[in-house]
Length: 100
Length: 130
Image (tube, rainbow over all chains, first blue to last red; front, top):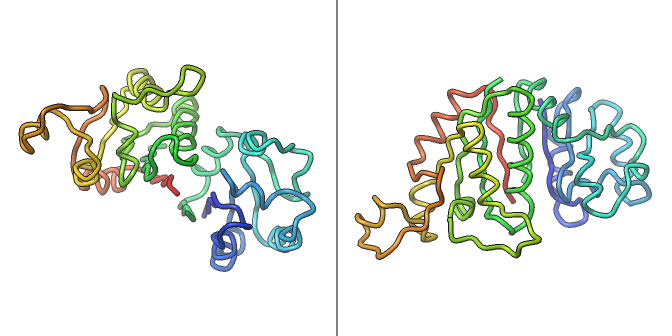
């Protein structure tokens, strides 16, 4: 199952709710302001690294660039994808849940 | 694969309408089918032809229109959400006694059943909102 999160973890708790309910083996894609959770050196970095243990984590590259950030700042273990990669993730997973 | 797209957010509000467009475009370019794009809640505001953004900004409504023309997309605006927000086509103008319409070309106003049908007919229902 693919989960998408579009809120910053510093603004809303959508990511926490998603992480709590997503089963092991799930894919989580960070989009829009959700991409802030994928950046190194913040207080959520440890949480993301722990989640990478049993979940597949992805972040939308164009939304990182749109915020003046760089793909080099992405936490190790989080895969950067483009919109085509987003489509592939939606197709590969049997269900998609958007955490708004 | 067959996708249905639900857009719950208006244009120029946050980013959901842009993400929905980019996802839809990427899916079509990869050869997937998009069964329908359903505009719900503030998303109905994507479907007014009166939108006039500055010239150096993206034209979100025209972008949907162009994509619909190219790929024969079905762009559906929820009628109840449209009535609340003043999105009007010819039928609604007559029925509600209004003096104008503003629905954009390629968009049509219909009911929530169109969303349910899209969910049933498609392999995936993608929700974009705020």
